Length: 330
Image (tube, rainbow, N blue to C red):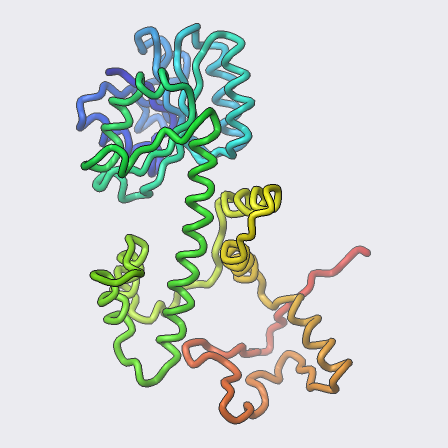
């Protein structure tokens, strides 16, 4: 089988290697000439035998839209395009309509596995017509983990269903990661626990919380036992936001995802404007102390009540300003 692969980055490059190892003839294109097999998309299409199969693995949004538009002018009736990036599911509907004008088939596929996928295989969630799924099954079988097909691959439904399933998958991932993170900090905070890494490692077999994410947490703690020096700043790919938007649209309560996502937003703020407002209000209604920069660490804590987690460094002021709310134009 022959496949054109657009995008040979961390995911795409590893996927190319895995497919080639399974005997698939992969012709890859990337803007990095050193790793690309062809000079441009026109040459890629020219080298593929009709009907062509093309897998797009580039960043979601404008870049994906640009690639799809260029392909539309190059492909012919009967060709097939798969968007395997992290596109928003609703974008798939527009791309499918776009290609349908020239008789080109379109599918979407959510891909999970990260940098470990080349070795372990990728979890695949695809959306599209049944005949297109069957046409691409050799590719799906090459990419998925070994074992029963249904344990690493699903035809989730119509166009858009694959990316929708991957979106929800990532929303669940946010919550799982945050639960492990909360447990880690509490174990670190308690002085009677002397082997936090060992606790996490002991959970990797036989327990109800075992998972691949837990295995990765153990690996992280092996590399940096107390995660010292690691910045709290956490980005988000956008899929957590999309999942929460869908939860609201469908009246599905998702407090775990919401808390995990909002915690990431908090991680990017030097000093929380919201908590500045809370501190000011406590001073107004209750006469509670409202501290200014330079007064940390705080006053003596109440008996039996920790003011700062023993696993955390208290906020310090070294003389430099630590802004909270940005200046407003209103």
